[in-house]
Length: 140
Image 1 (cartoon, rainbow, N blue to C red):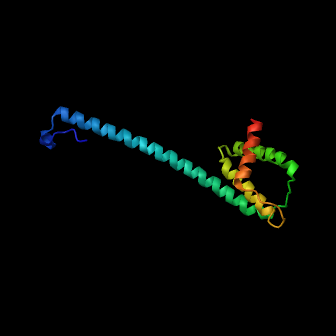
Image 2: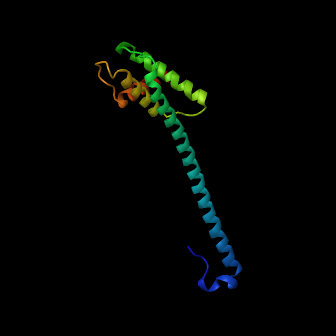
Image 3: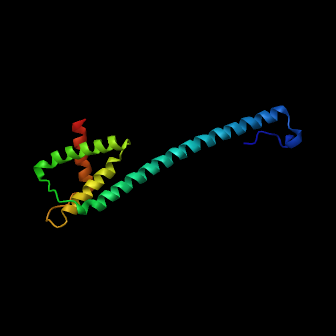
């Protein structure tokens, strides 16, 4: 994208060549600025994701220290309503949007950990996510 004629390089540049070069440099700078802003946003999102994953990992590691809480089949809806309220509370207290998929992964891991010795079918993360999304839709 070289606008300058080969014969007009260096000391032989005329005003039109300098203006063309200036425009080219301004366009290049604008593109670099846009890439920089996009990269900064991506880095901020990645930092946020790292913090949420670290929190999820800490919660999953601490799950073994808490007393067991068994949720019967008829109380599943109540449990996920409460989980949705906890999710909203955490977002409010932390002043940031949380990724609900990771929140559901932590719930699923907790459920699997508590039911590892009981002869119960395990829930898949997709099932937990489905329950959670359904209750969030009902709460509106």
